[in-house]
Length: 157
Image (cartoon, rainbow, N blue to C red; front, side, top):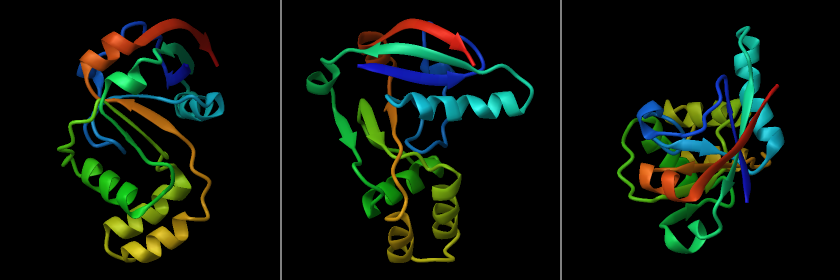
């Protein structure tokens, strides 16, 4: 499966040392199988006057049967609880791979209202059901990255 990672540099050997902690699915290396999603990720580098680079990888199909995977098919209460914990730096999960929607600007506005207790979970979920989930695939540890993610090439945007 081809996956993409938007960045400002070419990343031939992804490593967990450069991963930030308080992201949607916690610390990990984030990819997507959706090229338009990766193109949106590089926009933030270009807006800042930098270069945008899409790194292209092959994700070994064996990952689906040989690892522990958490998959969120929709924006749900479980997804909201999980990203809330991760964005607070409280990810205690032991998954190798997590797949689900990105808390992009529109989605994150609802999440932020929930995080700050301005709306309750049911209201947040009701609002999120109108959002079309995009996709991110987070590789959660170095062993998974090294074994299943293979760099192909990069392209400048």
